[in-house]
Amino acid sequence: MGALPVIDAANWYETIRMGDGVTLIHEPWIKPFFRCNIWHVRGRDHDLLFDTGLGHFSLRRQVPLVTERKLICVASHTHFDHIGCHHEFPDRCVHAAEAEILADPRNEWTVADRYATDAMFDGMPQGWDAARYRIPPAPADRLLEQGDVIDLGDRAFEVIHTPGHSPGGIALYEKKTGILLSGDVVYDGPLIDDVYHSVVDDYVETLQRMRELDVAVVHGGHFPSFGKVRYRQLIDEYLAQKRQAGCHLLQAR
Image (cartoon, rainbow, N blue to C red):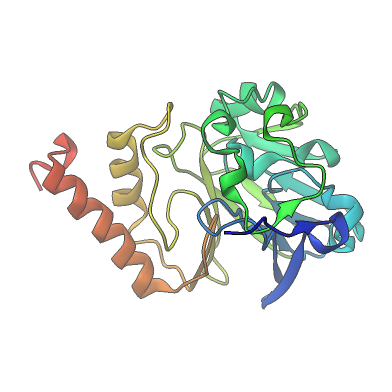
């Protein structure tokens, strides 16, 4: 196998308009399992940026969309692949349970020590050195809790606390459109519940609670978007797997 192509900053990001004012920003040279979906939502008074990717190249300098208007930057959780450019945005939000990590994103707390390696890439980012990778501190301006609202003026996204994958994981739900920005609690790929601060029982409880949510489209933290049928199928597959494995929350069901 030959050496990977070296990719410069100008060719690192890609934006794809998804409809309903939602745009996917992603880093196509990162393999899908590791590649964070960065979601931009257009609002009347503010825009929303949900997650900010790896952070090796500046999001603000390379993606004009994120500097066009006032923007609220929200972390779905504080794993390295989701908060790399949070420090570039002044209006930052995170769930209270992970505020300490966003303010002091050590590699062992963001799981960068486990996953931020050369094996992530299909194209090597110019200047990348895994041994020197660090995320700059980005203390939050606002701490989020279950039921809080991210108000964009003409659009409102409700915060759903989704512990399991990580303690302060959140999803954002727009009831009017049925759009769910789900972060890493549910996406169309292998769900991760074995990193150092994952709790399987919390994950099970979260997905049981979220299963009946009236979603139209789910924009996950990784992999392609999907609709209500696939949403419930993914949740049911995870719960069945844990039932088979003997998760005590599912024993009586």
